[in-house]
Length: 126
Image 1 (cartoon, rainbow, N blue to C red):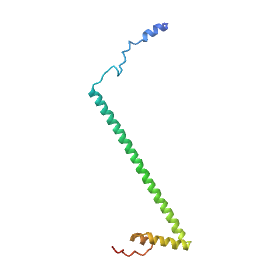
Image 2: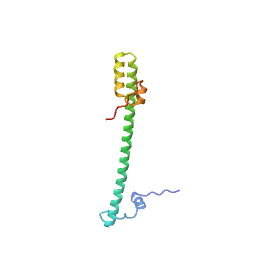
Image 3: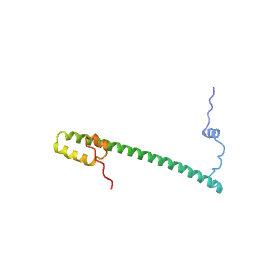
């Protein structure tokens, strides 16, 4: 097997491609008004879709945050109530004050029964 030596110029000529076509730039091509309007409508539809998608994501995260905040608030109330009810066992004056607050602010019948309070008499309508 014979290996031929070749110079760089000969190698370049062998790998040289044909002439490049002239670059097609958008500046040289003129689009009609209908084409421009159609492209603008496509761009508008694409932007509107993106906007709606992002708005939906923002609403989703806002709803998640609201739900998380409500859960945390409920948890705080449960813990604070448990502490108050436990403290009532050891401090008589606190128990009396807390019982008075419950009697004053708990109005619904089932809730009053839950705390062992007497049902309120119906209020006379003016």
